[in-house]
Length: 173
Image 1 (cartoon, rainbow, N blue to C red):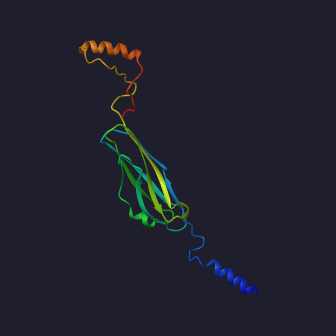
Image 2: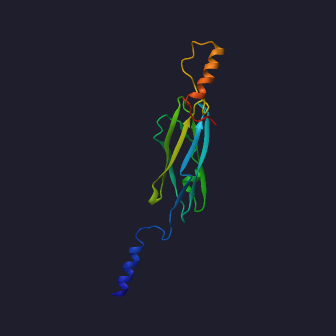
Image 3: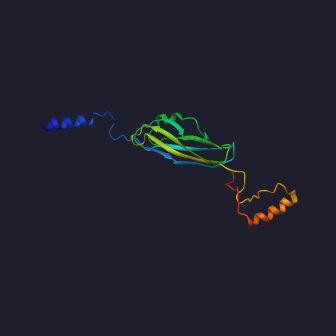
C-alpha cells in the first residue's frame, strides 16, 4: 500500500511536463524612458534593456507602443535575441521620440508580451515633451505693436522689471 501511494505522488509531480526548478524571470530597465524636452521635428532616442534573470530561456513575442495620442513615439527594430533570451542574457530595444508640432507633454507605454507567468505583459512608461522656443524667465509685454522700435525697447525694459514672466516654458536642450 505504501508503494502505491509513493508511486501516485511521483506520477502526480511529473504530469505538468515542465522542468522542475526552471524559473522564468524578466527584468526591464529603466522602468521609465524620459526623453525630456525636444525641439519641434527633432528626435531623441533611448533604449530599454530586457534581461533574463531566470533559469530558463524566456520569449518576448511582441513589443508595441500604446496610448500614444499624438503618435510621437517610434519603436526601433525588434531584436531577434528577444525571441529566445537565454538565462543571464540581455537585449536592448530602442524607442525614439519626435517633438510634436504643437507644444505640450506626451506620454505612452511600451508593452512587452512575454511567456513569464507572473509578467505576461511588462509596461515601460514613455514620457517626452515638445518645448517652446521661449527662454525661461523671459518676460513679454503685450500690446506694443503701435510703438516705434526705440520706444518699444524702453517700455519693454521698464515693464520687464515690474511684470511676472509670461509665456515661459522649459527651454529646448
